[in-house]
Length: 256
Image 1 (cartoon, helix red, strand yellow):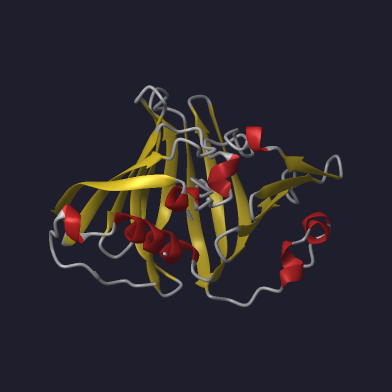
Image 2 (cartoon, helix red, strand yellow; image 1 turned 180 degrees about the vertical axis):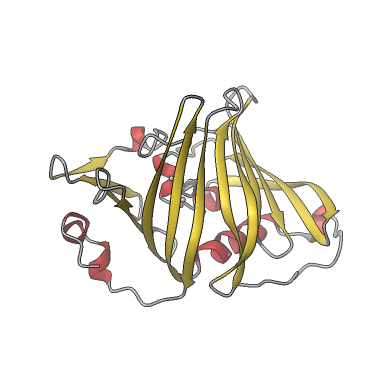
């Protein structure tokens, strides 16, 4: 589930009131800073969350409970806690490296960079989404496409295009952010300028002292009956995490 599913199953970010004057022009808005603050709003300096991931297909549906820890911008641990057959599966991301642990085979596997765009746990979130990667901040150029008002909030629509040498799979991303730094939608477009998948906030409420997207859905545009939802039940920000939490040893043998 990165960034978010990540953008999981990974999305998952301190100010809860607008820090911009209404309807500023494109020249007056630092789009990179806006995206950075949205990412910071969701992650905090560190975080702990409990959530449920539901994978929906036309003829079946299944759910998994999980816990997630983050520290800084590049360290994330996600562990499945239920159902029993999936419990213990975990994913650790540190810097630009990712490892998964499957208790059934009792093996830690390092995920190669070529597999970061692949599905995480059979969901519509990719490995990259679950890692909550902030690559979009430094490896993309950003420009404001539109500013509008909706439900008492100012909405910023930002186009992000990767640098020519960026190691990313998307041709561009469209990021839609509210004035309180809640990321309400992220669109993923391929190199042919075709919209492939979207991540949308379905519910927004206060959790952990912040206004956040509590339910996020990721789905492919050409398969509307297939989607994955991340529903956050509890989240705490700026909590103390020992570095030993984010180790391969703890990934295999959890101490919390």
